[in-house]
Each structure stands twice: as structure tokens, then as C-alpha cells.
Length: 509
Figure 1 (cartoon, rainbow, N blue to C red):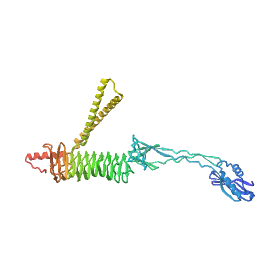
Figure 2: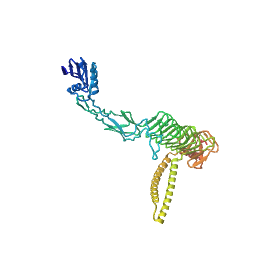
Figure 3: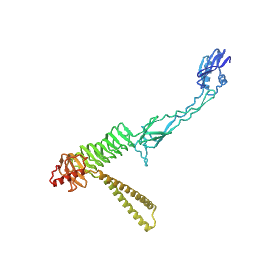
Figure 4: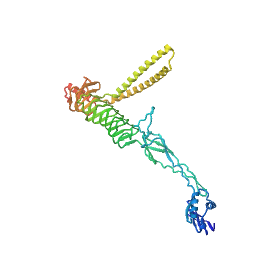
């Protein structure tokens, strides 16, 4: 093909494999990018300056170019030369870069906070579209993920067939934030809460913030941490949060429950809304709501037609209690009590609703226990007469026997709780009602062992405690709720003794 010089020089990533200058053409064959590309440029000098496909392939083979040959480019180069044109920088062969394998990643065993709902079916195949399951709850010590190493990719090759070693992917540079810890390659939760992972940092948070309303876009919330809602909670959406709940807006017909404090703007339950609070409850108003609270209840404006059961104090110092029944083991303080419409308003101070509730549960279990025993007695009599029981009756005997064992265990548990509740009530009961404004006609007061319906409306500030000696109540000048009924009784006794011995007292009735 004429005079040629092979591999005459190398420049960086470019090696000149062949330079040929003849009467037919000038030819240059180059190796680029670490032998991943072979390119050819040819300038024809005569009508015979073209090349055939076979000549080009032979030229490549002579230089050891055996892999990744692009025959369509070879043919294109030949067609260009056949037209008498210069073929510049044609890519005749191309190798393959080694591909890195998959990068290291964090394999999560829990659902992190996301915007994608995870609906679940119940046993009957029904789906509750109000329960979106945006995240999983985790416990201290729970393994929440493991860091997986990067993987090896595929080998590459040069145009000369030289193997290029496969590459590993990039390792995950995981940052561990608050509430989580990395032990080797495993990630554990250190606190209760939900897992946050942005692709680089993993953490566990005890807080769940809802920027707007709790509606279909948020769904029911079941969280082992603290929930804050900046908007309202719409009807039929429930919130359960172990470490507390704060709702800046209002709550509709919902179930709100926490083992700690709850603060709400207000709640209109329409007879179906409930609050279960293991700490203290602070709320603007309660309208037709059922409340059970193990701590104190503080209401700003009003309790209307609600059922409030409280093991601490109930204070609505500048508001009203209209209708319903209100229990407070630690005493009650309100501005006005009693509805003008005549709807009964009942106040129970120093009375433990929990013991009443547990007693009812015991009664129900005892009734069930008796009914089951009666059925078993009938089956036993039947067995004596017929010497045999049907398969259905045998199944019934097994079920009844198992239920009796369950009832026995439940009764024991309730009795233990009754003892605890009794001891608590003995320490913290305060049979006292403070009225700062109006005590309406028809209001029924229950304090200790005494109950009385108010026949004539009373106005003015007063404290009411039980008259244990004569029955009924003492209506006294207002004293702080923190001053217990027992302390007032002692002062009354001291006053009576003083009067009996010629002293003077100044109690108001």
C-alpha cells in the first residue's frame, strides 16, 4: 500500500499506530482513550485512492485491532473515499469501558416517612382508606437497617482485546443522626419514634408534625412519639400518640388518645368523639365529648353536654359547665354551672370514676361467668343422660372452658387495678367544688357520700364540701382548690370547738 511508519509516536491518550503516505492516499490510524477507540483518517490522492472493506479490515488486523470493530463505519469510510472525498476521524473500532457495580446502599427493614400510602386489608379483605401507614413505629434497640457493600461490575475490553478489570460501585457514606446508632454495618434505633432517611443521613425522631389539617391526605395517626397538628382534625380521623398530642386547631368526631399530655383548641364530638389522656388535658372547649383523663383537666371556655372523667382536678375558672356529667377526683372549679334550658348538669367531686368503671367491668365478667357455668351445667346433665356429646357440643365445652380461664385472669387483673385505684383515691381525693359565679337551679352535686339537687340558684363565690356529721353540704367562702376539703373540715371542727368554749369564728355560709 506504499511506505508506512507504524507506532511512530504517542501523545497522552492518543497513540499513532500507523502513518502511510503513498501515491494513492495519505492514511493515519490512531488509538485513543487508552485503547478504547481506534480512529482512521484517509485523504485520497488519485482515483485509486479508495480502500475496500477487506483492505481496511486487514489493516486493522495487522495492528492487532480485533475487538469492537464497527463494520458500518468501515463501509462508510470506504464509500466516502470512493467519492474522492477525505474520510476524517472515522471510528472503526470501539472497546467497552468497565462498568462499576451497584453502589453501596442502606437496606431498610422499616417503612420510613414518605408521601406514599401503604393500605392494609383486614381479615375480610376490606381496606380502610383513612389509615395510610406512611411510616413504621420503631422501638429502642430495634434493628432498622443494614449497610450493604458496593458490588463488582462488568469487565471491559480494549479494541486489541485486552481485558479491563471490573470496578466496584461507590460505598455508602452513611451519616447517623439523633436517635439512631451504627454498630458495624447494622443500624439500630435508640429511641421510640419513626425513621427518617434522606439517602445520606438516617435518624429516629420522636416528633411528627402535620403542617395543615388531618384529613384524607394525612389519614389516621398511630405514633409512638409526640404529634403536633398545626391545623384541624376533621371528622372520623383518629390520633394515637404515646408521648403526647398538640392540636392548634379544633377537633371533630374523632378518637384522640395518648399516654401523656394532650392540648387541643377545642372539640365538638357530637356524642361520638372521645379523648383518652394519660397525662393532663388542656382544651378550649368540649362539646358533647366523652373524656377520660388520668391527670388534671383545664378548660378555657366551656364544657357542654359532655361526660368528663378525671383523676386529677378539673378547672374551668372563667368558663361554664352546661349539661352532662363531670367527675373529678381532685375537685372541681368553674365560674358558672347549670344550663338555663333545664338540661341536667351533674358534678361529682372527690369520687373515683375509675373504681366505678372497674366495678362495672367486674359485674359484667361475673354475669358472663355465671351464664357460661349454667350452660356447662346443662351440657354436663346431658352427658349423664345420653353418655355422649355431639361434636358441636364438645367444641362448645372447650370454648366455654377456655373462656372461663380468661375471665378468671381478667377478674384477677381488675381486682389488682381496683386495689391500686383505691389506694390512689385515698391519697388524692378532694371532695370540693368551687363556684366563682352562678350555681344554677337543678344542678345535681355529688360529693363523697352525699348528693343534693340545687333548688334555688346561688350567685357569688363559694366552696362546697360534704357535711359528714349532719349530711348534705357546707357552703363556705371561696378558698383555693388546692386547699383540701379535709383541711376545711378540720378548720370547721376547730371553729365549733372554739364557739363551744366561748370563742368566735367567721365562716360564711
